[in-house]
Amino acid sequence: MAILVTGGAGYIGSHTCVELLNSGFEIIVIDNYCNSNPESLERVKHITGKEFKIYEFDLLNYEELENVFLTNDIEAVIHFAGLKAVGESVKKPLMYYHNNITATLVLCKVMDKYGVKKLVFSSSATVYGVPHQVPILEDFPLSTTNPYGYSKLMIEEIMRDISKSDAKWGIALLRYFNPIGAHQSGLIGEHPNGIPNNLMPYISQVAAGKLEQLMVFGNDYPTSDGTGVRDYIHVVDLAIAHVKAVKHVMYNQGIDTYNLGTGRGYSVLEMIKTFEKTSGKKIPYKIVERREGDVAMCYADPLKAKHELGWVASKGIEDMCEDTWRWQVNNPNGYEQVTLVSSTTK
Image 1 (cartoon, rainbow, N blue to C red):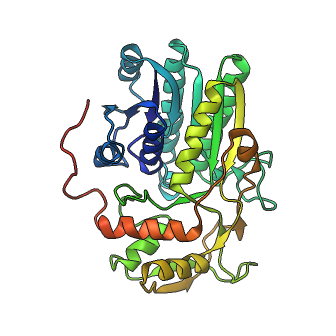
Image 2: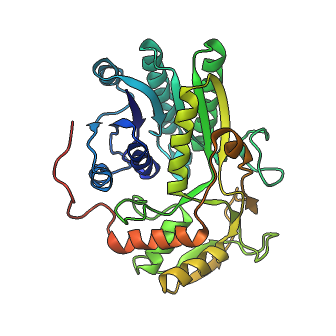
Image 3: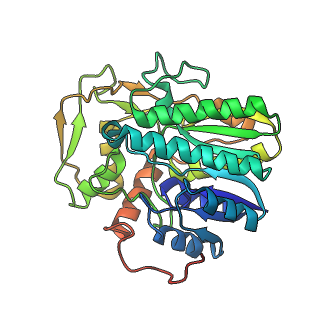
């Protein structure tokens, strides 16, 4: 019996594959590599010393997906696959809605046909929109401000309707806050295409001299130093949460939602200072105007995940910065370099 991981070559997917394999699970990965790299999976094999099947195709392809279920004994699915850039989603909403929502519908149809009704879905804290207070609880009102966020919110609603229609389904909706960091080995990490959208890879590329300076969007928020505060979570902690969640859905029915964060916020300037301390590099930055839609503070109340999944984030902000810098130094061009292992299972 195997866990099917869609989008398993991605940033969070690859780290989750490591934790699943280290926890004794057999895995099968599907990825079309539109925003990931097959080298990440070769490095997962290197880290764990374990082999697994990899299928390269688009999740929109019903026939290819059905073949995976026909030829493998699948117990549950962790669904990461999807487009994820907020700015791009605003420019190309039809692409985001078609890809993220239709692919999920195809996946759920095939799962239903083959009686695989255990699913962990990669959602996002973007579904909370502009929160009315912090820390954020799972039962807060839901809204969002961009097509990427709407695609996550719509999929959550689809999952709730599926669960209502058939009590055999067990579904966990995992709402991530701000994943950063990398595997301690320095072999897998975040490899954004082009200029990074997120703070930590931007900081690390400035530290490495690939980018000139960091833009800090606003310093007049009602926070300790005027810059925005976010809940940063180490990607390995996040990956471990997926292992806990898949164990939970395999033995439970119905649908549950969980915040995955540390429960503490750090400001942009705090992140810069900590990164400078752990890397020994100076991070030049420039204060610019606020971005439209940004909020002053956003951090989770993660107690539900602690009580129901037995999960607590264990890594601190220095761990996150150290591991990010190790990944950057070891992989200045991400995965675009000599591969560690030459074999690939298809």
